Image (cartoon, rainbow, N blue to C red):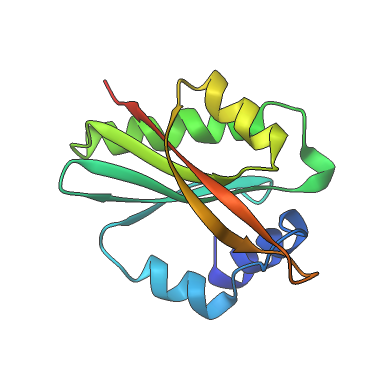
Length: 137
């Protein structure tokens, strides 16, 4: 997937916060610690550094939701991170994003921190970020 394709899907999936740009995706993909799994329906971008894996973003085409694609991407990125030596996975999620929180909880994540006012909404309001973690096999 190209940075253009990633940015296009990210913009369709992220309507409550600022989607990432093509140049941001290009920069991330140029980092040797950054990895990508998925396809044009759903992708996950993550980093593995010093035994820890961090989910940077996951995006599912709105027309493809509720088909298990995000769960499959979660399974794929965690498995690839474990193969790369990660023993712990981290992510953050907007406190008002109930579907994502449910997905991450179902994948074995538990809250471990809070970032107040982390996400800025188009209206100018902010939402807290819940930091979640889980061990990797």
